[in-house]
Length: 93
Image (cartoon, rainbow, N blue to C red; front, side, top):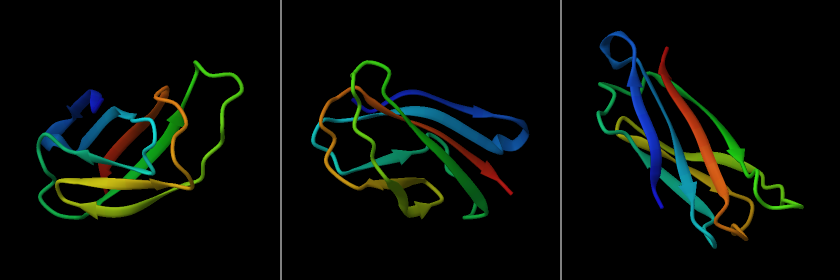
């Protein structure tokens, strides 16, 4: 569980990206940056992925917390398998 890939990219660490495993039964997941942004002046793009289960359940999601050190995404229900991943990019404006 946890981040299976994370990378700081670009001059001045302006972009961070990674893949976070979403544990079975979770209704939210937090991403913590290895190196924080200097301020809250960044945006987040996320997608969910599950290429294992068939059929897959579809979940709504929303970012419910954002800080210089990371963010939290909440889902519309509890994850029914451990095959879901959250792909994310955080980039300074």
